[in-house]
Length: 424
Image (cartoon, rainbow, N blue to C red; front, side, top):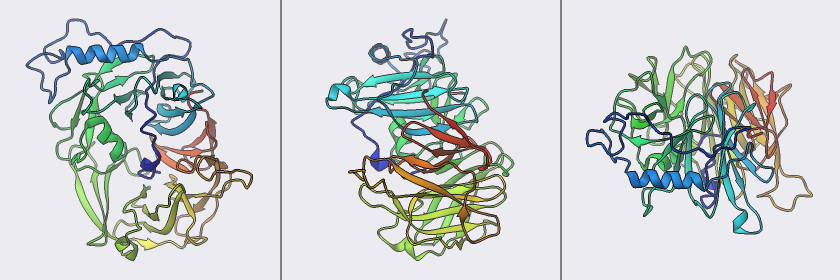
C-alpha cells in the first residue's frame, strides 16, 4: 500500500545491508582509479550542491566497518517492505528487536535474481539510529544513514549486488537521461534520502556517476512505471484535490522528458471530511483504468476503506460498490487483463493477545472488467502479516502479496503466484 505505512516505521531501528551470499568479505566504499575532476569529491569543478568531503567518506568507511555481513537475513528479523524494480530485481528491509537494546537492528537485502542470491547489510541500533533507502535498477539500492542535521553526517551511498558501495552526492536539476533511474518511492522515504521535505520534482539517480538530482520539467507525485497495457507511459499521480473534487496526474510517453497534466472529476463528499486521508492509495491499470481508495486511519489498526472509485476512460470516476461496509483495507492492484484486485485485512486470531503485534490474515477479491461486484480471487494466496504491511502492492511490474512475517507471493498476471522468501 503506497503511502499508507509511514506511521508504523520504527525510526529508532536503523540500518542498511550488504554482503554477498557465500562471500563475507568486508566491503568498503568503492575506489575509482584515476578519478576525473567530476568524480573527485573534493574537486571545485564538481557540480554538487554539497560536495562529499574526505572526512565524510572516512565516516562512511567506518560505518561499513561496523556493519555485519551475513550471507542471509537471520531468523530473528521480521520482514517489513519489499520493492521490485523488475521481475528479478528487488530490495527488502527488515527489523529485529529483543529484550535489550543491544538486540535491536535493521537490515536491507537486495537481489538481482529474485532472491536466489542475496546481498545483505545489517547495522545494530547502537551503531546508527536512523536510515532511509530507495530501490534503484539492477538490484542496487540508495541508502542514507542519519540526516542532514547530524553533527557528523555520513553521505548517502549506493549499495550494489555483491557488496560494493559507491558514495552518492546531490547535484543540480537536469533532464532525465538514459543512464538514470527515476526514484519510485513514497514521499517520506524520498525526503529522508534527499533532505527535501518539499521535493517539488521527481528525483533520479545516476548510479554509475554516483549522483542524484531533481528531474527538470517534472512535478513530484506517486510514480507508476512499467504498467502493463500502457505502452511504456510513466505516471506521476498528484492525487485528490478537495477544492475542485478532481484527481490530478501527469503522464509522460517519452521516458520522462516531457509531461502532460490531466484533472479527472471525482465527486466524493468524503474529500471534505477531516478523517479522509487524501490519495491514501491508488492503482493505475491498462487502457485508461485508474482506481482510488478513500480511507481513514485508526490507531494501531489497518486503514478502513470508506469508498472505492474507478475510471475506465480517465474522464470521470464512478463509485464501485463494496461487498461489505467499511472493511479493513490492504491495498489494490490491476492485472494486465484489466481486473482490479482488492485486499481485505481480517481480524487476528482470537488467541492472539495484541491487535498491534500479532499477524493478521487477509484475502484478495477480484473485480472483473466491466463488472460492479467483487468476487473471491480464485487461486490467490492467503494473506498474513503485520497489520500495516499485510495486503498487496505493485512494484516493478509485479503484484506482491504478503503471506507471512517473512515471505511474499509474486505474480505478473494476478492468476499464477510464486512464493518467495526475501533475504532467504
